Length: 245
Ligand code: OAD
Image 1 (tube, rainbow, N blue to C red):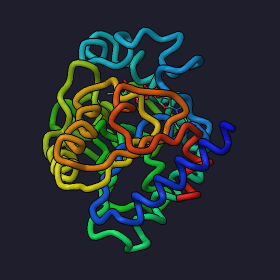
Image 2: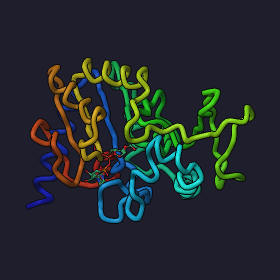
Image 3: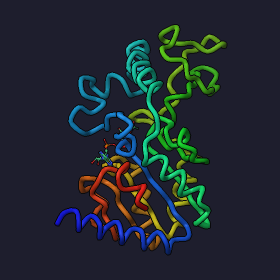
């Protein structure tokens, strides 16, 4: 029975996608779950054992940059052995297929796995753990060193480097978020994949899409605050269901 329901949802989603011309995708931690990366809010979530305010705020970094860097260094080191999964690959293939007039992928993830899978122009609205930014001169660079040879690492200018991610209490990079909001408002189909849709402004993107008349498809084993807007809800792991679309 459950399998038949899931099949029906996949069929509906497939039909909606076949009709779509402008697609906007928002992904969250769930899309990387099958790559072995923990989500934020699930059991065993990333923040467990760490008070968020100790490791992911500008205030925490000002107080104890080494503590913050130890947390991020462990994440960067763990990421070095991680590969994209079938969900990332399916989204890259969807973009490459040329089926759509426009295809925009925005992610809340900082892991870089969409790019590794071959997606282009990914809007990393919460930044990237693979980049660092100098708090003194502002220079931002790719940096894959893991583990870091020195904690906290320093810029050639002498300033402290920080991970180029968005912390609690910080604004999103405005140009990146504006590009995502623009694509959300213009799309006719919005895919919302593996996000609890609780953290704003990211979670407002599918709401914008729906408000502008787009059809929503949700891929998430659990219900979320945007579920009631979805024309099709695929209640299964993204890596299982996205290759079917
Ligand atoms: P969450 O951990 O809040 O939510 C992950 C979602 O993925 C949940 O709704 C799960 O049900 C779903 N999920 C779990 N396994 C899945 C799978 N295999 N396939 C599909 N879905 C699955 O993560 P996000 O919504 O990404 O922000 O969290 C949003 C933001 O909160 C993060 O970007 C981060 C965090 O604070 C910053 O760091 C700024």
